[in-house]
Image: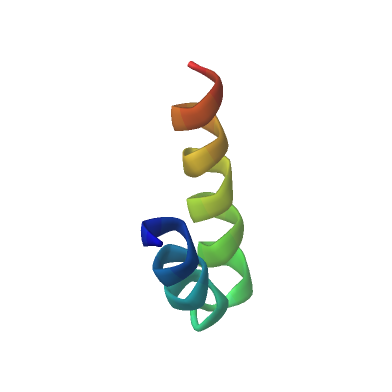
Length: 31
């Protein structure tokens, strides 16, 4: 549930910020 909400928020962000957020999420998932 929370992931879906986060993804909706991320889609509304500008491209560069979206990339930073996705990189940050991957960092949290993998480390």
